[in-house]
Image 1 (spheres, rainbow, N blue to C red):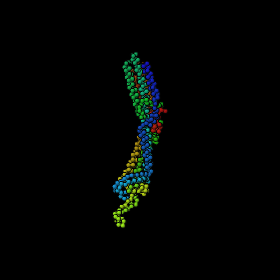
Image 2: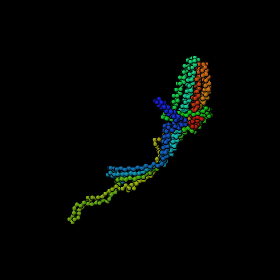
Image 3: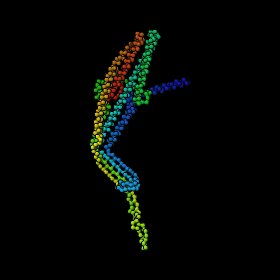
Image 4: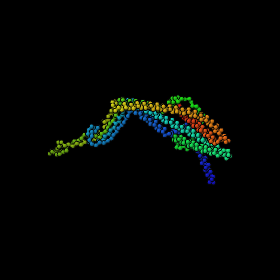
Length: 477
């Protein structure tokens, strides 16, 4: 019963693994690129930079509106001071309140704010082009790793097939040695070749595992377990369309985001020069304010009542009073807040003109710096153009070279394949030794390796050229 339970458990585990293998996602190149673009952290940072530039642009647009500020205070004062509302000395504790609203409107500043808005628009556009360029760079990297993984998958397949052929040959050679047809040294040579091919297969599988890891890391996946890619039908390698590097470059100039970004940067630097020159012009602003206040020293009271203290009475009953001493009774209260607010209300409006005369040469220095910025931006544009042309020129030459290599290696595969088959037949009947047999097999293996290398190199280079021509990154027919 225990044995049956173990067998049943193993069957269930194997069945589960098969279901999981069947449910494993097979990634296409387009899916890999889209996933990388959605999850790449640096691309997310580029999006945040765009949002930041949008906020900067919005703030500069709102900057043309008037600035309005309110102020309010409530306090107490002890000791002698001049009350600002009564203009008299106050020595007792005095409560005071101030409330006012002021505003300023920039009427003219040498078109500085207009140019700032224009520059911020260009900076936002540049941020968008920079994000597009980074996405393209990630897409190219994903395509490179994807093709590298396809190459190693095919290379591993070839290595396994060759290893299987060698294993079969070891079996045949063992039988021939046992029959006395071949010497044992021939068997040892074939077994050494088997060990060498086993090592080559292990190395190829390690390279495949590494390329899978590189691709999953580029996609920001947590692991590469169960990660498989689709093997597209690449079709026959055909002669690329007849486009010169200059024609490809002219097309790419109108679409490549790094060129657009550099061109926008030149425009932005020219607008920065206009902002710097605005410091030469006078500035005219309109300002106004309205406010009021309250002071506890501003008091009103009742009319006082005066009387003289009686000091005596005459014989006839008439009271007698002193000539100088007199006492008064009365009350004083702060003037009500509402009345003071109306009495102390003040309004102002004015135009302020600021004329730059000398400011430590700062205006001229900023203009000079802006001119240097324009020259630097133009050099950056030329540098981007030169780099783009070099990349296209290199890709074109590599594509032509890979195409020629593929055609030559394809012919070599056909020739060495027939040669190997013939050598195998001769070896099986003892007409050649194992060394000659291994030499023919190595030539055939090298031809296969050279063909798949040139094929994927050609596919990658032509894909890059198509990408610079404005076509999407795809594989297959």
